[in-house]
Length: 79
Image 1 (cartoon, rainbow, N blue to C red):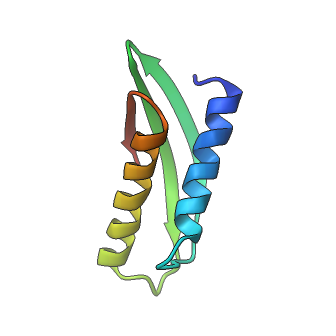
Image 2 (image 1 turned 180 degrees about the vertical axis):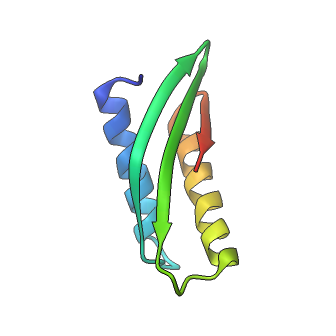
Image 3 (image 1 turned 60 degrees about the horizontal axis):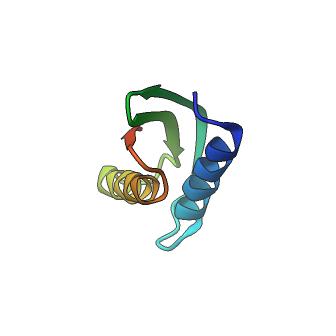
């Protein structure tokens, strides 16, 4: 598992990305991490409002993934 300060940084990155425009009502839970060599695997569940389109949901996932990869060395993200 990642160090507590790294997990806290990941949570901040995810929450800031969710809050950034275009704003989509969403939340996260079940954040888990594990190391394998130089890779840090990050997994979590993203919940979105039922009125959110699939395209908008996928766009949000893409933005979150890009933000995590930029913030955490070796990040491999599964949402």
